[in-house]
Amino acid sequence: MTEENENLIEITDDDGNVIKCELYDIIEFENQQYALLTEADSEEDEPEVVLMKYTEEGEDSYFETIDDDDEFERVSNYIENLDDEDTDEE
Image (cartoon, rainbow, N blue to C red):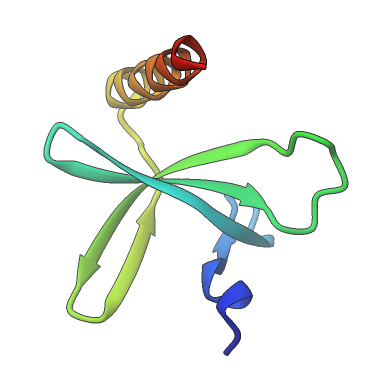
């Protein structure tokens, strides 16, 4: 496997469609890891970012949907604030 393909994963949406995504980043927040994924085959200049819970068990990695709306909002706000901090530093 080439290094470029190591960041590609397949997720299944609510309708059962398989979507190839690229792992953009992993963020730690409130003792939990979250993955930022982008659609690998997207032709958009700025593809949509998907936020999922990320866990590792041994050598296996798992990506889970965030079902709790409050948790999703807290993590999203945290990530947006990280982006703002990066912009301020430039």
